Length: 325
Length: 291
Image (cartoon, each protein chain N blue to C red):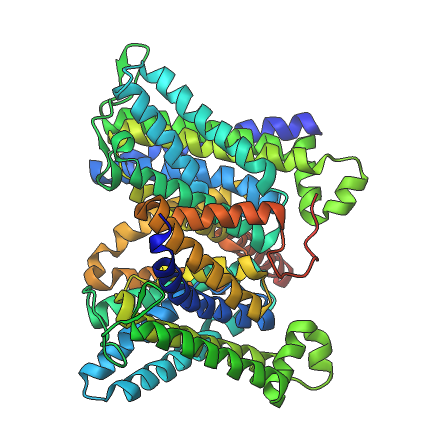
C-alpha cells in the first residue's frame, strides 16, 4: 500500500514537471516566462508553508523573512565575499534554516493568535534589519550586482534555462512534500493539528515535530530566496516585508489548506493575477481585493476544494444521467 | 542621557494611547466573533482621511471629525454584513483572509478617492506647546490622552450598564449560551464591527494632527494595535489599552536611546521576549498552555 502511494507521488510529480516544462510553448512572450519563474518560486515557499499551516496547523505571518534571509545571504556571500555561487546558495539556505531553528524553540510554544503575533513580529524585525543595515544590505534601495546562476560551468542567463531549473526544483519540492505527508512524520503532524494532547498521549514528540516542520518550511523559503537572488540579480527589502508574508499565507489558504497541489495553484493564481489586472489600470488594486474576498467567500476550502467539489458534481451528474438512460 | 526621558514619555504615551484605541477595536471584534480583523488599521486611516475630507468640504472641525467617525462606523458595519456574516461556519482563518482582502479594498478605495498625498488635520486647539517637567507637550497630545480616557470610561459604562453592552459581554463569554438566552449573536457581531470602526476612526482622527495621515498608514498602525492587544492579553479591552501605552512608551524610548530607524524593531523585540516569558500576554487569561 505504502509502496504504491509512493510510486503514485513520483508519477504525479513527474507529470507535473512535464506540464511545467511544456507550459512555455503556450506563452505568447518571454515576459510571461519571468512571471512563471516568480510563480514557481512562490509555489516553493507556499508548499513549504502549507506543510506548516495546512498540515501541522501552525500559523506563520513571517515567512517572507526566511525568503529574504536566503536571498540576502547568497547575495552578500557571492559579491562582497567573492564566494562561488554554490557556496553562497548553501550558505543562504543554511542561514534561513539556522535562524528558523533558533526562532522556533521559544516561538512554537505559543498558540493561535499569539503565534501569529510572534511570527509577525519576527518578520517585521528582520525586515527592519534589511532596511537599516545599509552598509551590509544596501538599505531600502536594495542590493545590486548579484551574479546570475552558474552551476557546473553553465551560466543560466536565459529565462528559459532558468525556468527549467526552478521547474525541476519545484517538482522536487512537491515530491518531497507529498512523500512527507504520506510518511510517519506527516501523520504525526496531522495528528498534532487535530489535538496536541491526543497526539502527545500517543507518544508523538509535539515540540520536535513542530520544530521540524517549521525549520523545513523556512529552509524551503530560503531555497526560493536563493533562487530569486540569482535570477533577478537584485534584491530589495520591500519584497520580503509583512505584505509578502501575508501574500504567502493567502496563497496557502486560497489554494486550499492541507493540499500540496492547492498551494501550487494558489501561488500561480496570486502571482499571475496582478498581470491580468493591468488592463484595469488604476482600479487594479480594488479588483485584486474583490477577487480575494470573493474567492474565499465562495470557495471556503480554496481552489483545491472547489475543484474537488466540481469533480464530485460532475461524477454525480454522470451517474444520474446513466440512471436516467 | 536621561534628559530626554520626559519628552519620550509624553510622545510615547500619546502614540501609545492611539495604539491602545486601535487594540480596543481588535478586542471588541475578537470577543464577539473570534476574528482578528486585519482591516482595523484601515478604519484608523479612514478616520483621519475622512476628517480631512469633510473639513475640506466646509464642515467645522468638530463636525468633520464626528462625521468621519460615523462614516467609518457605517463602513465597519457594512463590512460585517457583506463579507463576514456570509462566512458563517467557515474556518476562522478564512475570515482573517477576508479581512485582509477588505483592507486591500479600503486602502485602494482611499487611494483612488483621496489620492496618494500625505495630509495633516489641523490641531484641535492650537499648536503652542505647554512646558512641564522638561517636556514640551503639544495640546493635541492632551486631546489624545483625554479622548482615550473618555472613550475607555464610556466603554466601561457601556459594558456594565447598557443592555447591549451586557449582551456583547455575554457573547464573548459563551456564544451558544448567549444565543440561548435570546441574544442575537449576529446583531452583536454587527454592533462590534460598527463600534470598532468608530473607535478606530476616533484614533485616526485624534492622531492625524500629530503624525499626519495618508492612504497607506493603516497597515503599520493596525499591526501596532494588534501588538497592543496581544501584549495586554487578547480579549481584555483594558489590557489592550494598557498594552498600547506600554508599546508606545517602549517605542519612544527605543527611538530616543537606540536609533529611530529601529524603533519599530525595538518594540517588537520586547513584545517577543514578553511573549516567550508570558505566552498569554500581560493581563491575559492563563488559558494558553505551553508545550
